[in-house]
Length: 341
Image (cartoon, rainbow, N blue to C red; front, side, top):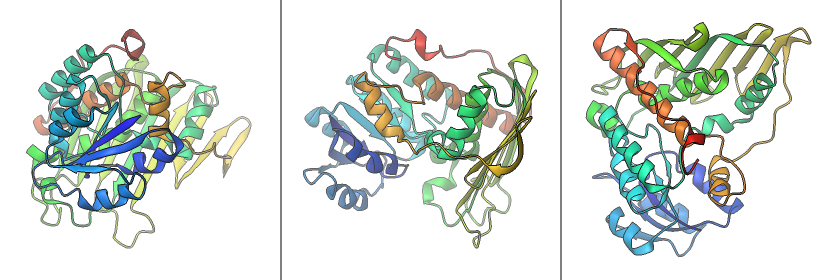
């Protein structure tokens, strides 16, 4: 299976760490955004796929190499454009999130996807971390009963971000870039649909990073009166032991599940919550995506999940920009209603 990579900005590591677990081969690399440097990635990829070629235009690359899979990982505002180009050629797409930075672009991607009859998944790779995978497995088997309250956290070190992070038009916002993971967890764990969101964000104290928001919080109401919040920040101190601090707390009718520090903790009638749970084995999101294309399995991230979380993040950003409650109206169909799944 031939794979082409468009861009070097996003989490291409998901592909590199899984490529050896598949029969896929990276045959081409091209930048996806103006000024994007892919030479460092090219040197890394060559060790895995020595015949990989570098192109100056990803459209030329797709036309000449005719890959089965396109990996989109360029500057965030260009994800939609590159994805549409690949879908228009009947190519399966594994794309960095957010899939689009505007609702209009997201609609264009949706239309292209519906017409292409191919597979698509966004890089919600945190679902595949053993702590989250273990917690999800326990919750879906009834360990905490029916979820009633959810609290999610994303906290990162800021460091010095690339220039495109400094402008909303190219970055898209911290809620769609960072918060989208937490938003995805809320839907994934609960199985509920978003009803409304009220959000806030701020770019104060962002160490000269222009329009980049360094703090944000989203309050969601979901179906069946489930209440959820998601916070995100870039204020994790530089001397912290890790770059990120991801947390999730789920309160159910029969117990509480917490994910923190790479572990999962369960408090219910059978567990006192003091010891971390044994973790499920690590899985690979890109390997699962390739297996799904071959009809040999199913990726944990569906196309519908990818569109839905992106829409939710963009509506949350709109709420923060406007300072008002946003009600969810339109919804993308579930993936099992689609031709490709």
